[in-house]
Length: 299
Image 1 (spheres, rainbow, N blue to C red):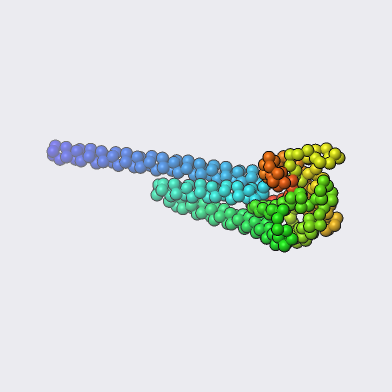
Image 2 (cartoon, helix red, strand yellow):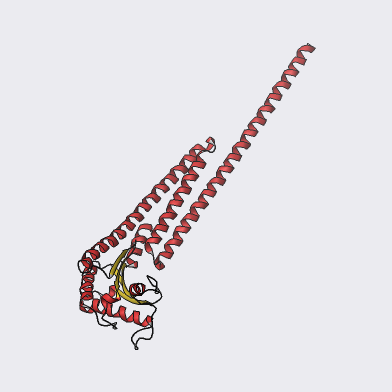
């Protein structure tokens, strides 16, 4: 009888010990799950913070667009910002997807949201690229027409330079003006300016900036105060011819002068001086047109 009681006592102790061990194991599992949940919550919070910073960067970029002078460059910067944000989101997805399988359902939902955000941003980049391509194509078409029209008249004494956002027609002083004059224009130059006006009339959204340049020699005419004044008088003469004789819209044209302070070549040689005496006609899409196109894309 005593032996039976002892055996029952031992069995009870073993059973009780097993229960305590199971409780410790369950407690450890629960603590591990809480730790993983906290890590995942921290990861999610960090990811959301990065997304908010990216959104703030895009908003700040939007505010700067109205004052931007190189609008195509702004678009390129915007595209870079969006691509960086996509890269960050994809990196976040890759990191989060390797976390605890115990939260798979919530993880899948987050991944779907981020995938949708990535698709939206990729679509936005596509629209930005389309806007860039449209304006680049417009500039390229204008440059092609100018080369055809001006090249049919001139063989030398001019240059046509094309960039992403502008076309620059450079006419040397000896082609345009008669000797020692900033107001009397050669017949050949008149024919060129007439063609320029005809081409620009087909592009009403283009602005024309006429800039007068000189070499570093003092003005030949006593009435000219300095080379700034010479450049301004030359530019004003060209603008008057374009708007008064060839009916180019004055709203498309502005004039300016840089005198001797932006040479194309060295003033140490006669050929360099000759190249520096010039008038530049710079054609570019109107800033407000490009800004409007950008806002339609990002808003």
